[in-house]
Amino acid sequence: LDATARVDVYAQMYWMRIADALLEDYPRIAALVGSERFRALVRAYLACTPSRHPSLSHVGAGFPDFLALQADVPPFAADLARLEWARMQVFTASDAHVLALGDLRHLAPDDWPALRLRVIPALTLLELHWPAHEIWAAEGDPSAQNWDPAPTLLRVWRDESRVYHTRVDAAEYAALGALRAGT
Image (cartoon, rainbow, N blue to C red; front, side, top):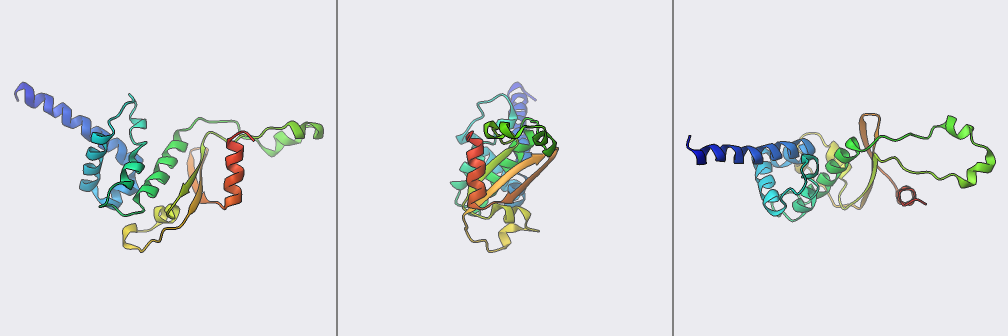
């Protein structure tokens, strides 16, 4: 190969490596749209939003918003991607000491009013327009089902090395939001 062709090999490898990284972050989106379309979406996304961070772990942060602007993906794809991104973020979040019942038993009753609770770093809240948790759990091809938009509040968290997500009601969402804000 001449010099130009050799450089082109490395240039193509750059795109492929980022596509592979995003495939790990968004496996359900890739399955939804298919491998070829997913790689085309990644190239278009990177053309609009080039990576500005040296770590590949940040490159997909804007992918859900990018998907929201794409007319040729299912309308729920952006919210499904938001759930996938949140799951990945809480998986890699810092560990923290978790308050246990035994910790509370050692506190004097007079100390309770000054007690400040905090959420763990490996917890996030999502406010979505689609039931992404149900779409995420769908067997087979989620685009084959007739999903209806529905306001959906989710809690995504990690316990040890496992990531979970569940729907929450408005009261729990507000309470967790207040805790995150330091209330």
